[in-house]
Structure formats: structure tokens, C-alpha cells
Image (cartoon, rainbow, N blue to C red; front, side, top):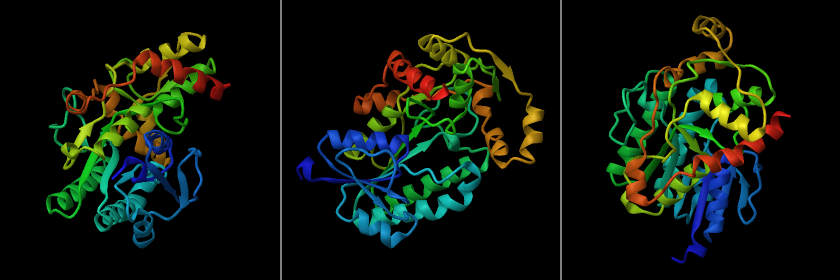
Length: 316
């Protein structure tokens, strides 16, 4: 089928879903973006439709005839995951099975848990908290359906996002940067000097777009290529240099304070559960994705050049 006539359906219009929609439109595909409200950042050339994606029948109607279905959903904050994700993930999987569309999921590295060494496709899933366990279950459910021949699937696993469209509420780095770019001291929750991989949002979209069209990718999870790891302090320093602000001032919040706060604030408790990613080197090894599909990460300089102005404008 001519690319101009292929339908690609995206569930979710957050930073990744929006970037993916723009990329697919530019490639000449018909693109349909599904959200509960039907709104989000408008992508010229894409169709935006309101639908409850956890409603299997409603979702299947919108996916009918699609070549690829992309799960870029993010159902609320961490405390809502246990309730919101299972029916949503199940509905998306069933819709892919009914429609015959390839299912490509935008995922993360929570399912891996604490590791010793770079994370690769061969790194086993050994989650240490319920968010990682939930992601692991979603993957195993999809993989079982693939192995049974009911659906074709692939998954793109990213480290923490970075990019101009990332909201302050999405990730610790954006919160730390907001304080830094306001010339304030950033209260950090873990060691700011451990090497850590950061994945550019546009690189996630680029990987998703390739995985949906290349049958070599199906039946496997792939690590999204990222730049060499950089510590939180180094990233903040880079952003501050581009923005022309001061050297980052960081204050480490004691872990006991976070645990005490987590007893009253569910979101803080959820964040504490994944701080192992910053207590030691956390490196995403995407070389297999680069070698297989030719996807390379956006240069770190370009990431900072686009992110720093957007985050500085937001901070001010």
C-alpha cells in the first residue's frame, strides 16, 4: 500500500505521541490521534478524535484499517497506574488483534529494576516496585499474544525523557531544571553525580516509527538510542550555560525525609520507589537498535540547544 494511504493510529497526545504524529504526517501517512478529550497539541495534517481507549469496541472502531497502532498513552500520575493501566493496555492489545494492526508500545526501563551495567535487549525484567512490575506484565501479555500468532508487537524502551516539550510534571530532571533556570537551589532526591542516560523525545518517536514498519523488530523490545550518560549536575550545568544562568546549586534531600513525606504524599512515595536509577550508574545501551535500524540519537548539543530556551521561557 502506498504510504500516503496507510493509516497510523496513535493513542495519547503527550510529548511522544505528538512528536510521533508530526513525524508520521511528514512521512506522508494518514495519522489519527486518539485522546479522551480529543484535544492536545494540534498536529497539522493529523486527525484528532475523542475516544475512551479503555473501551475496546470504541477503540477497535477507530483502529479499523490501520497499519500500525502506537500505544503512547500515559494514564495519569503514578498513583493512578494500578487502576488505569490494566484495562487500557488490555483494550489496546485487543484492538490491535481485531484490526490486524502492528502494535508498538512506548515504554520505559522500570521493568528492569536495579542493574549492574548497561541495560540492553538481553537484560532481564526484574522490577523492584509495582510500576515496574506493571510494565513487565504489560509486556509479557503482549509478547504471549504475539507468540500465539494473534498479533504483531514491538516495544521501545526509553530512559528518562529530555526535550523542549517535556512538562515540568514529567520527570525529576524537568523539576530540577525549573529551579535552576529560576536561579534557585534545586532540591534533588538522589545523587546528582551518578551517570544517567537521557532519551530525547524526538528519538523515541523516531524509534517507534521504525519499529512499526520493519518486521525484524516485531516480537521484541528495543532500547531507544540515547547519548552517552550524563549526571544530573552535568545536564543542569549544560542547560544553565545555554540559558546564561548561574552554576546549578543543588541540595540533596535526605532519603529519610522522602520516606516520611511519602507516608502522606502518594506521588512522593512512588518517586522514592524508582530512585535506584540515580543511586548508581543507569545506562541505556541502545547500540543494537542503532545497528539494526540505523537510528542514531539526536546530538547532545542539539538536545540542549532546543531544550534550554523552551525550559527557560517556561521557568520565567
